[in-house]
Image (cartoon, rainbow, N blue to C red; front, side, top):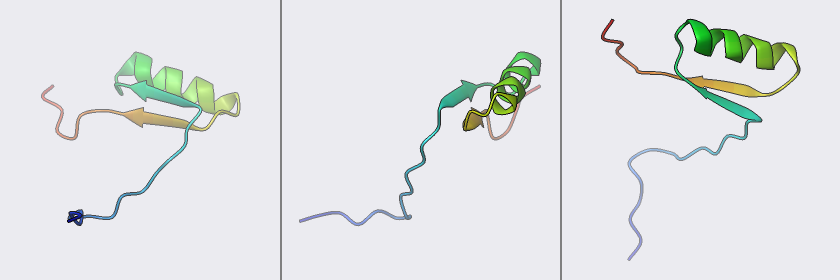
Length: 49
């Protein structure tokens, strides 16, 4: 028996994944995008700072 997921699963493809949207993470993300790379920036949903 196969379980049906509660939500639709969507696959994404990126050249670069940056973890953290602090100053360095955002700068790295913008730099990669400026160089033409498909980039994702992943951070906390609810930052504690």
